Image (cartoon, rainbow, N blue to C red):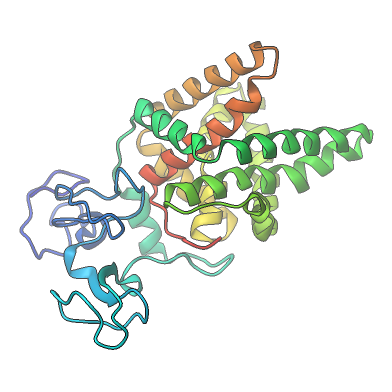
Length: 314
């Protein structure tokens, strides 16, 4: 077996790579299985290709009654208390959990997350994003129309309207697309109200919008290239804020370091997404009603593959 970061060979049971000191318990799974559909995967796989959720090792699956949640020995089929079916579920307390709002991630854990390897597969991301979009098409289209109205109406107020849009509405409403996409990725049924849950993360999202926006603005003033670099590097910061629930600057740094592993691959991904949205504009402008939510669904798939989705409650 090889370390997924540096490809150094290691033995089963080793906790850290002898060469790069990667935390093998975190970044490598032996005989992983999906806790939802029970599909088995090759060693080292991190996410279920069907459900999009984090895989676990078989020892993390605890047989429980589907009705009363009582634990049973492996092989038990029915609960002796209420006759409920006994199924193996992921033991959540052993899985990484989202922190409380605005918490600081320990330096070591932040470093481990930033160094976990991943593969850029633009075609697969867009394909899966489209599948997720079709699972809630009506909701996505309805919210997209509402989103555009929310972005345009405040700008009728000279000066003040633009500030309101940028600092108050843009980030929380944009994140609403991601939250619904995350729920679909996790096999859950979203509601229209989920689109507005971005406001639950109002302060860190607004702070990211202001600070990140200023940094990118300065970057574009400095011969454009630094601005492009920061725009791509911070592209997943708002998703990190919602999923990991960490303070905004750590989310920006985690996004920057993670994207930095495959920066040109991520750049190519956003260029393709950009072309799709340009085609939407060329379709008499109506096409963007479809391409904007498709973009959000695709970003959620990309985030899941790059960072892993931790939270299951937004």
